[in-house]
Figure 1 (cartoon, rainbow, N blue to C red):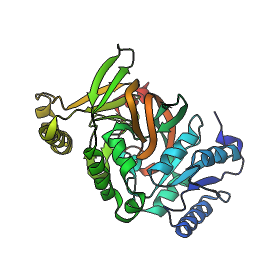
Figure 2: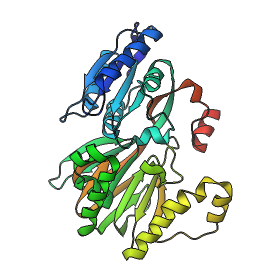
Figure 3: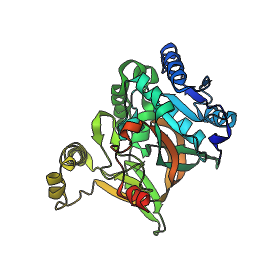
Figure 4: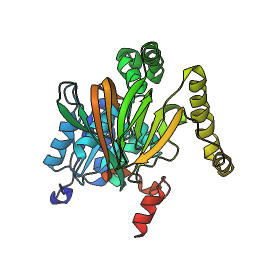
Amino acid sequence: MTSAESTSSPFAAVVFNPVKVDEARLRAAVEASERDAGWAPSRWYETSVEDPGVGQAKQAVADGAFVVMAAGGDGTIRAVAEGLHDTDVPLTLLPSGTGNLLARNLRLSLDRLEESVSTAFTGVNRSIDLGLVELEREDGSRDRHAFVVMAGLGIDAQMIANTDPELKKRVGWLAYVQGIVRALRGPNAVRLRFRLDDEPPRSVRVNTVLIGNCGLLTGNILLLPEAAVDDGIFDIVALRPDGLLGWIQIAWKVLWENGVMRRSEMGRKILSRTKEVRTLRYLKGKKVVFRAETPQEFQLDGDAMGEVVAVRAHVRPGGLAVRIPATEADSLPISEEAKEAQAA
């Protein structure tokens, strides 16, 4: 591991997406906070189309940064987290863009830039899980990535691949409506062979399969109600609708049962006595392998990753340190598994 403590004069690093942020405002906020904290001037690393943040984060660690701020959308956050993997340098979220999913799941501020920047210098660290995937392409090549929120194959990934990036800049997450309409027009059933942990391989026909480290999506949609960022386990959901009725069942399950009833103790008791619908199947595990009959679109934290024929994913418990406000250290959500680890 890389130790940030070897540097005598602390400084922060800022990895920023120039398309997503107001650079002048960001620089002013960082300079004010570093001055108040008595830190050395921060170092700045701009992302590019060729490298959305992985290399910049690695360079910041090599330069000796005590903390790395990621300023941009979910793609920038994911790339910086990947670059910080296997280091003890914490990540500070400076949310921007349409999703901000990790910040939402950690209940962090989404629209108070100065407060988020201040957290880099005055906050405390919290360890969360990191998802690691190996993607196999049709030509046999393989590449490895990390994710912090969710990975997906099927309609979910097709929707992202089909979304016009220019439209997304103008109207935000509503641009995904266009993408999902395009995805639903084509053949969208995917036949997979999969293996969860050490269980025997199985075959399944799905429309979408999602591997989640977090459960909350944009619009306060709770897709994975039991997912926690620090439980050391993936929450996986397979969507298998059969016609319009199947999609209605999924919508009811996600929007009403997960989104409303699971948020109260009485609602959870009622749901504990109901049967699961076959159109929506939940699984849990620490590692999972999928192999598709034909190449399929794949996404990581909302970024299209191209077509794959196989995915191997495993969770790295506590694989990423995230900087959170010191005042909220005891109020942020924490899994029962993490509580037991802390007690031990």
